[in-house]
Length: 294
Image (cartoon, rainbow, N blue to C red):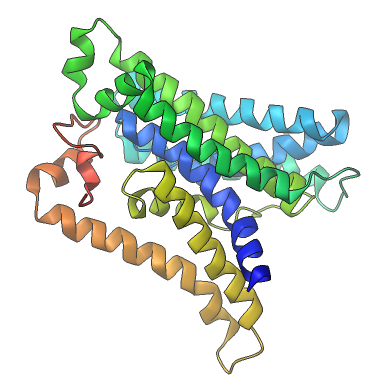
């Protein structure tokens, strides 16, 4: 039992970190579908920097690349008012393609000094609490939530809505970068093309499952981590194909997204808000394109 809980935390940590990053963006009014590509590019950057300068500079480099990736998404989704879904998918494809191309020289190389998984797990839990306090107890967090729920209120205070959204994308991108660093510096201290293995998409579903609440995201990430642990533990011990176990977490992701869509379909305003470029949210604590019941 203790082993299962420990592995659930360790498996769930990259999902948690990436989910917190996506959550910050969505609370500000920007849907970030580029998480998968941002994680992959950050994982490569972390490994390359760790090879040259050590693991801690690798972590900082991953945070920086993640933040820059978030700002890059903001250029299209915020400044140019491009469709958020299209812009996010483009960033995901670009990140995956660039990391696969640039990472060929690092494949098969060992990491001399990997970081402990437990340290990252503690960092993830602490960041979930800090994000919660930031959103609920600080003035900047209030502006960030208002930028997603009621942008006109932010304008009344003389604060730039676009600036707040860029801040959320930068900070959120940095957290996504930490998720990538965890993969290549701690969880699997190496670089392999495709090592994110769809975890970025799981993180996006986690945000919806957690109803855009950081502490619920903490529990949800560990739940997904437990599913991944059971997937590996039960393979070969029960007469079920391994492919079926591998598909379980992603089937749950599809289920969460489908339930969210059906919920939105009963609220046309919320549904159409998700199809707009920059959704204008009203009196809701969560994004109107995917409201969850309180």
